[in-house]
Image (cartoon, rainbow, N blue to C red; front, side, top):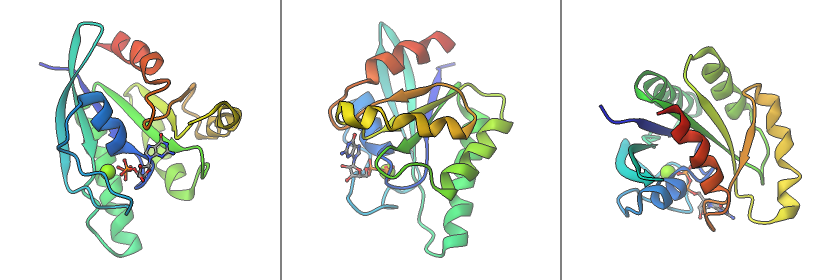
Length: 163
Ligand code: GDP
Ligand code: MG
């Protein structure tokens, strides 16, 4: 049974960009508009000679605010069920939102290892903003830039320890 790393978070935080970087696949749709990635995408990744499955959780096809949040919560519940490790992605350029907080609540109640990933840390100035995500109560913050790839190695070094 393969190890599964699920990428969760609200729309537009960079989940698909990270998925594409980890899997070097072009299957997930990346778009400037939020909510375009449908369903869930599974891809293979490798780090330090370990292979694992990465899941990009999209499926945000609902259009009312309530349904939208329900769809996200459903994705998080599936991730809690199936994943070995969960990557909870937040966006340093916006800071925590109400939706982030409600996802964090669900993840705190799970028994799965959760990594809080501060994405879009494209420069050192943004690095100093990442401490704000300690408010999730989910432990250490892993700053990355899915765009440049910086920080992803340090993150994966810790992730593979759970396999
Ligand atoms: P998703 O909705 O969570 O899957 O987010 P996407 O991967 O589709 O990314 C949403 C937007 O954020 C796109 O315009 C990406 O190019 C942008 N983005 C993703 N990662 C980064 C990053 O590390 N830095 C910056 N500056 N933008 C990013
Ligand atoms: Mg996406």
